[in-house]
Length: 252
Image 1 (cartoon, one colour):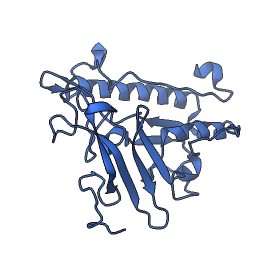
Image 2 (tube, helix red, strand yellow; image 1 turned 120 degrees about the horizontal axis):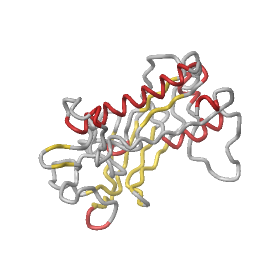
Image 3 (spheres, helix red, strand yellow; image 1 turned 30 degrees about the vertical axis):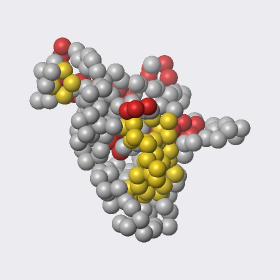
Image 4 (cartoon, one colour; image 1 turned 90 degrees about the horizontal axis):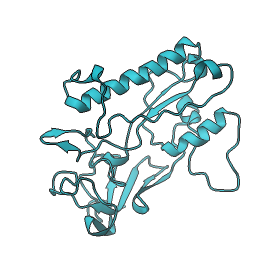
């Protein structure tokens, strides 16, 4: 692929099967990790990404290639076999895969590499979206996004290059399937990020942060709780979404 296309622009999209059940791991990586089959899977994915980067470097394309690595959702909490956890870990964030509202289901890191264009070692805490990849790639290819419809993504280059300090998303809507579960507002004048939950999954057991009784959390029906008024959090101070606000605790 690189050999055929290295003298002209190309788009390579790699969607890895890894860190997803049933955790298919080749023999070479089985038992390599201290974290069981899931860890083996992570290590094999890491090796595969390394092979791709090595090929780009070998063909002399390192400084001419924009690389974006990310996940489409947070780690799965409910994936188990016996006592072994086969899912990921979402740190301080509540919930996980299949949850359209809680941070653990939607908040993932993105890693970008473009030597000579983007400064190395920079950490950006602004929230972006995988929807932003489309207008970014169109811009890099010298094209223009369609003007006959609303485009939800925002180009990433200004944020990555430091020419702007804020994400292009003042509001972000978080769906579970076709159902709106939450919306966030990055208040520009204060820098505060508010998040309102209209529906949240019913955790089983209640304090587990996941739907272990069902295997995965549902988006609607008797498996969700509807909130009226919505649950409201100040993510700037409470990223774990542990303390819902009220008129008493937050007059604003």
